[in-house]
Structure formats: structure tokens, C-alpha cells
Length: 178
Image 1: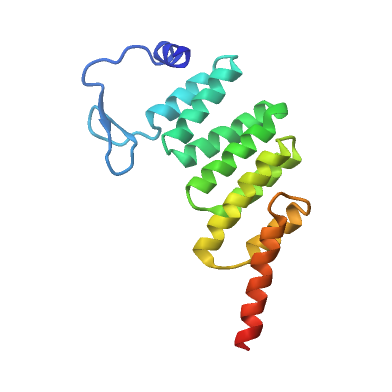
Image 2: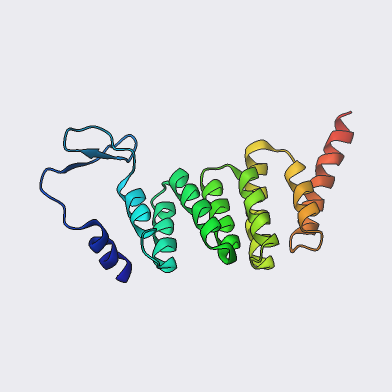
């Protein structure tokens, strides 16, 4: 609740007719003439949050972008925050990975989840995230190369045996058909 009270203060009260509302196709907001604005309301909130020296507010604003499926803007926000808060880099990388996963860009998600792991995120949590992305990529492409990647990144990971089974099953099918 505190987040939204601060946001109301950042944006001030809205004048009648100043904004017509979101465009159904893009989700971006229209100005009073019905022209598309460059930033959505949540992007504006994030930009305004950067003017305050309150990291929690800034991370909450970036999270709102992610939760409202404004993935491109959320990625930009988390990249900006990772530069500003070096010690929180792994948090930003994990959230960027989540943005990519939600867009079904699983290979990019794996790259960011792994970067988060390298920079201090919980090993077990990133193992789960990478595995979930690998399974999802496999369901889309039927390529077992994602499991080879998992094995390389997590040689002692929770799902390494399952990954090896997928790879071996694919090799057996390929050998059988030749």
C-alpha cells in the first residue's frame, strides 16, 4: 500500500481530460488529443521513482512493469537499476531472465538466470529457473541442445540426470532412425 501512496504523490492528481486512457492495442497511454504517448503510466512512475533516493521504491516500480506485462520497459528498468545498484545486480539479472521467460524467449532467459547465479543469486533458485526455461524451450523446439547447456551450466544441478536422459533418448532415437 505504501508503494501506491508514494506513486500518487509522485504523479500528483490528474486533471480531467488530461489523459484519455490506455490504447487497447499497445497498452500505452493516450494524451488528451488521443495521440500515443512515448511512455506508459508505469514507465513514468519508474522514471519518477529514479528522482528519489529510495531503492525499494525503484525496485517496486520496476516490478510493477514486469507484473503488468510491460516486459521491454521492465528489462530497461532492471538494466538501469543494475548499473545504479551494483550489489543488487543479480536481482536485476534474475528479473530480466523472468521477463524473457514470460515472453517465451527461453534461451535469453537462461543467459540472464545464469548471470544472476554468477553474480550472487541463490544457486538452487537459479537451477530451478534455468531448468524450467530449458524444459519450456524443449517443448517449443524439441531440441535437446538446451539440456546440454543445462548440464554445462549446472554439472551438479538438481536436474542433471533428467537432462542426461533427454539427451541420451534423443541420441537413441537418432541412432535408431539411421
